[in-house]
Amino acid sequence: MMYPIETWSSLEPTSDFIRLLAVTLAAGLLAMPMMRYVGMGMLRLHAAIPLQQMVMGVILFVVALVWLSTGFVGIGVLIVGTIIGLLPPRIGIRRSHGMGIILVPIMIYTFAQKFDSFGFI
Image 1 (cartoon, rainbow, N blue to C red):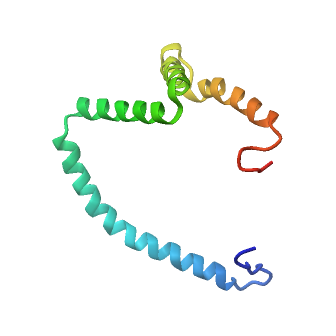
Image 2 (image 1 turned 30 degrees about the vertical axis):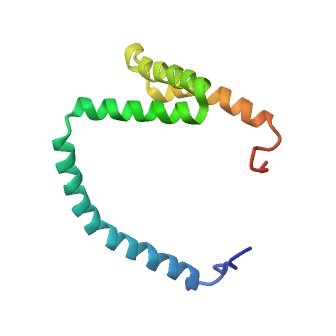
């Protein structure tokens, strides 16, 4: 309701569509050279940092964020999720099947509520 959108009723595209297409193409044309430049710098940075220290840093960062945002409950969920994520290759199934163990209880809990925290159905 903040921005009236023209409906596409004839063969010629609306001005909104043309504007969106132009912005998308411009963003792609600007992003490609920037990404090549930034990507080379990231490659040099990646080569300079030992892999094991980088992985441990990322793990500690994720654990710290989970601890700060959810406390002990979040750490428990993180541990259970990590174990579930490590099981599928060991027992010979795909990881997508293991996601059902996490997603189904979350969906049941979410669908049991009438409204979420933002007031949406």
